[in-house]
Image 1 (cartoon, rainbow, N blue to C red):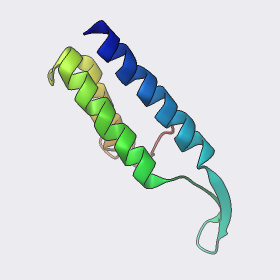
Image 2 (spheres, helix red, strand yellow):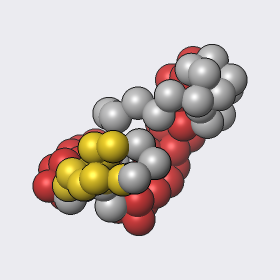
Image 3 (cartoon, rainbow, N blue to C red):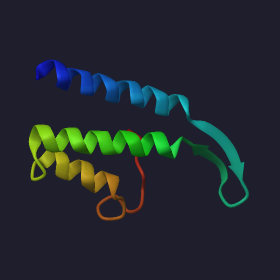
Length: 84
């Protein structure tokens, strides 16, 4: 079981590297210079993190609840989407 959990964390770490490598910059007439990333990779990472947190800590854990509050901006972060 510990090996499986270790592998899941390693996979999440590798996915973060992929997300970081997907970051590009561009210009938008609506906001000037913008930074973009692969939203599909980010979504995959978020789903995998939530699943792992639920399995390890439970849905009522502070870790899971904090992740959810950051994932759903506007409640406590005023619409700011943090980069992990």
